[in-house]
Each structure stands twice: as structure tokens, then as C-alpha cells.
Length: 442
Image 1 (cartoon, rainbow, N blue to C red):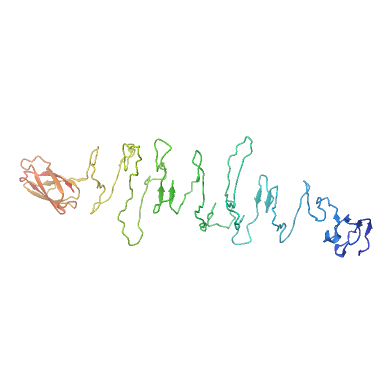
Image 2 (spheres, one colour):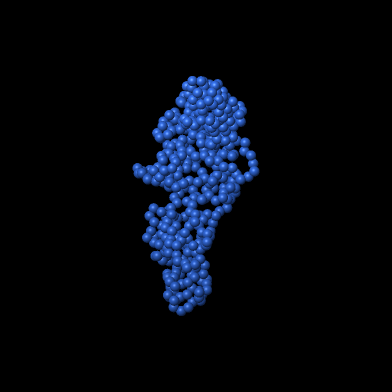
């Protein structure tokens, strides 16, 4: 052996001075191992191999060590290990074995009470960052399910009430003065999420029941869906909203039920259902353009329906100053109808039928232009005919005309239709001004 002065030794025991440096130890080749080193203060790079299997006395601040390996096996309950490194890694475990922590873990700051994993650290170092990033390649032995984030929460078998259980909770902190964020997403499913046979941005498999919702939006902000929506079934091709669901749960069932309370800021119109269809700016022909369409499905064997209504106006629709079951405001013109019943079934009106009319005031006689289906004109005394110009009239129109004044001589008229007008012929000349009523049917 080679030693520097100042070393004292007895059988199998060496005592080194404080200034002793391990670099000057070459090897220990004789004596009976293991040797016991009583003090290692200021002995840099001292290791078991250089001492031929010597054992180390356990410093009280560290705890016991395994013989020869130098691995710490015990840390007292009140002890604490502090690792400080300005660069690189304070803790680096490159082995493939599992790592275990029974206590909580804080990153950036110590974990607080009730927190298992607490991350509180400035986000920096790159233009695009992630608070927690998972990038993994799923290996071939994983054939059941791969869940990158999975929660499984139990409650203790004790009597207590938990006000809210949130498996994932997104909260916004304070945005610093001068900073701005264009888009903030609580949860985001990227457009690249399309590689599987079936791809779901968000999936809820909760079965129906009281207080159960697969999707519940309690906030008052608007909700937006760019794609089609299917309720009870996936959206049918060409359908923006497709509902195919059994109507059940009550003796009176609804497929779509709209109940709204018009608030005081609505001062022009309150509309329950609004429909506005447009066409693309392209050259094509659409044979039929139906804003509302009622069609009967299959009536199952054994079921019976007493009355079926394509559209129904309830009897309580009477609360306004003017109440209309159906209103059409299409102006007259070729191919225009406010009400068109093309079916051959009978039509029934229990109430009064009122048709728009034009009444010519007394004292106005002779030819008139009246573009309504019902009206009146006045024959002057001694007149025997009168022409009414009317855009609704064709040569095939049926015109019913009656004398509306008890004239002593003129008792009846004949109506002869032509394109755009009709002529009234009196049976004899009127003695005085005489009113004639007419009605046109096309």
C-alpha cells in the first residue's frame, strides 16, 4: 500500500485526516476485508471498488446503506433529500424498471393538501408548449384498450356527501396585462383524429335515466355544430337534423317540443320556429322546394289512430288582438297561391269564410278595374252593360253576378268572361243607379 503521512491504523481499521483526498489512494491489496472506514469527510470519489470491498459507516443524515453497493435503503420519517442542480437533471432514472412514489408529487412547487400530482410551473421554452404532454407508441401487446388519460374514482365507505365529482375540470386563470388569447378551448379534439374505423371527438355511453345526461350544457352561451346532427340515429345522408327515436315516456309524446318564453327585449316579433331556405349560386334545377312537409310513416299492426293532422293549430291560440291559424302574404301573380289544396279530398270550414272584396262607393258608376275575386260595381241609369277589368279573370273563369239594388226594371245580369276582364249585361236598362255584386271562381 501507499499512504500519505497522518494516517493511523489498527487491525482492519483506518482513520484518515480531514484533508485526506481519495485521489491519492491507489489500491488496498492486503489485509482482511471488509475494512471499516470511520469517517469519509472530504473524501471525494470514494467508492467500494477502490477499497476492495470496504464498508462505509452510515452518516446519520442519510440513513443506512447496503453493503458494497452504496445504495440508500432507508430515509427516516423526518428526513429529507434535497437535490440541487443548475442544469441537466436533478433526478434522472434511465432504467427500465418501474418507479414508485407513495406520497404526493409537486412539479414547480410542492404539492398542496389534497393534491396527488400538482403542476405549478411557468410555461416557457418554446412557442408551442404543453402543461402535460403524452407522446407514446402503442406496442403490439396492447390489444384491449389504450387510454392515455383514465380516471377511476371511488368513494370511501363512510357516511358523507360529495357536492361535485368532476373527472376533468377546465378552469381559466388570470390573463396577464398586455397578453391576449385568440381561441380558448376547454377540451379540443384535433382534426387529425380520423384514423380509426369509427372516430368520436367526445363519447358518452351513459344509459338513460333520471338525472343522467351524456351531454349537458348548463351555460347560457350559444352552442355551435358545423356538422349534421342525428338524434336517436346517426345523421341520414343529406339531412342537417335527423331524428329517429321512439316516442315514449308519457301518454302524450313529442318528437319535437318547443316551449319558449318571449322576454321583454323582444319588441318586434316572437317566432317559435323560423325556416328560411336558400339555393347555391350554381346552375341547377330543383323540382320541389318544400319548407314544411308532413308524411305518414308505417302505422304498426294492431295500433289505431283516430285523427291525424298534417298541421294543427290549438284552440287556445286566441290571446292576441288578432289571431290567425295560418297566414299567407304572397301577392297575386301567375302561379301564386296563398292557399292551394291540390288533393281531391273534401275541404271543410266550420267558421265563416271571408274573401277579400272591393266595394265601389255609391255615385261611382261605369267601367271599373277591380283585381279581387269579389266586388261590386254600379250601373248608371239607362245603362245596359258594364266592363270590369280584373287580372284574375280568364276565359274559363266562372263569374256569379247578382243585382244588389231593387230597381224597378233591371232585375238580373249576365257575366261574360274574357282574358283579364268580364262584361256584365243587364236584362233591361236600369231606371236609376243600380248595384251589382260579383264573385269569381277559377
